[in-house]
Image (cartoon, rainbow, N blue to C red; front, top):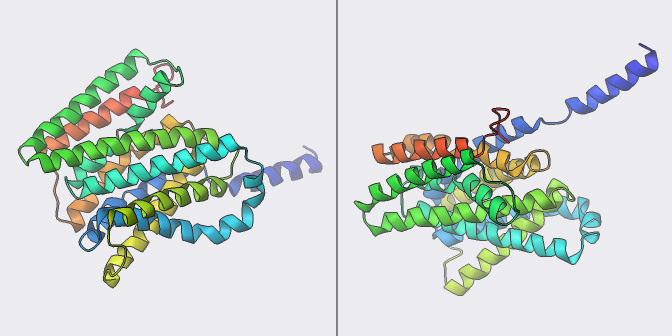
Length: 310
């Protein structure tokens, strides 16, 4: 091998060494987002749920703003009206996701809420089939049926606890639909935008939507104890900036279904953290329903030709 070729290979290797493998990025994202439900529950002792959602996105946007305006103005100027409309839609559905899911955490168990909101890969598959015309295979249909059975088990189990918990389960499912739309839009926009160029306007739009909703609803947005502000800052920094940004980064390199499959590990981490720090152990019914949901999602998004996730 010539010296010139060796130098070229070494340069390529150096560049590749500095890049984070997509799979490792997903692992980092899962570990970070698993902390969200615990931080949110701790904040909800003093902060209304809508305010938690609003401050989570606002703090995340403020932390990203200096970097975004320094690095992304040129790519934003190149976007057309359709791209900005998609960014606005992505921000709006992200706001819906966080509002409904965070409210659900105050109404049902962490295990049930996180498992149900993690059904978003099923809705990615359904939307891809009905809207984008992608094929819904027998394996995907079987996975959907298994997961729906698991959701029904959790719902029936929460009937004994009253309609309050059942409404929390429903809100978590609405959050799952919203995040599925968010992932599909992100997959399209990330093909033409950098990570920061995408997440900052989306987070900012979501924060604006939630803040306006909070003001209109008369929700208290200040006057919290110092410890509550700490939980709000942590939920913005770790699960939002580190966790969700890792997922959005991976969307440029991996299919939306693969990324949404990776978050299946989040319910496990979230449930363990809730058990350790909130003293909230999952019930047998919730565990059974959760296992069926995870099995169903695994079936639905698995590639039958290769045995790997699509």
